[in-house]
Length: 281
Ligand SMILES: [Zn+2]
Ligand SMILES: [Zn+2]
Image 1 (cartoon, helix red, strand yellow):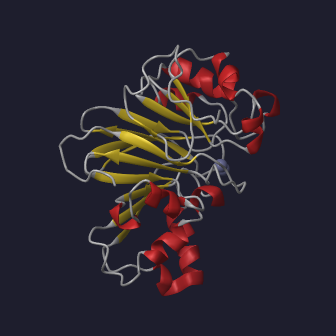
Image 2 (cartoon, rainbow, N blue to C red):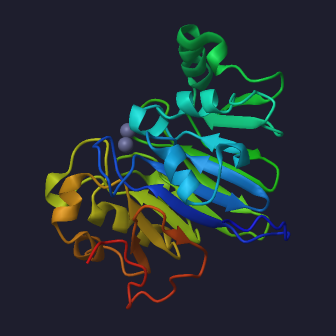
């Protein structure tokens, strides 16, 4: 079970809930990352399977304070409907604190569209469900309870943003969401403690709108991040040496994500050892 004691400021940490994609996989659930920042529980993306992975991480849906959506592709957002619906069981008043959902422009329209279909099944008591739309044309910055979030537009969908969460102790986690190569991500991730970066396909299978190991590595190198965590692996990634491809451009500490892996600032400070590899042997 997770430790729920409230030391302040608590160190920031990130648990990969889903290191996969839209492709069904027993090893790699769809995209989701749990970030603990101070006393808050933040979910970044909410792909199918997220609620089960949350339980494995010792967190229930009632513990979540915020859900941040990097964009609206179903493998990043589709568990929103069952999650809100499950919040109503056994009754809508079990949740004791508001749930705030944050995303790019169009977030409210996404919910309104889902609500047009599901109606009261997606409603929570007054004041318990909030939506915050970030600027998707330029950088944005919001202060929440125990943390601050900076966002920058990414190159994937019109609503796509990446997030930088900074905790009370100044430590930071950056989550790229889906994106192609771009300078905004370098700027957002500047000297971040942890960069969780998408790495959809191997170098020789690059597709528009996504990164490869060497491109993600180049971004991390330019941004001088303290730890790079590669994630969002299509099955092709598990057939090749992703680590070596990333090492073409990046020399710092490197982790390949696996589901339920937790990283904290400074937990992988030795680049030579590549400690904490998420790859199966
Ligand atoms: Zn996408
Ligand atoms: Zn994706």
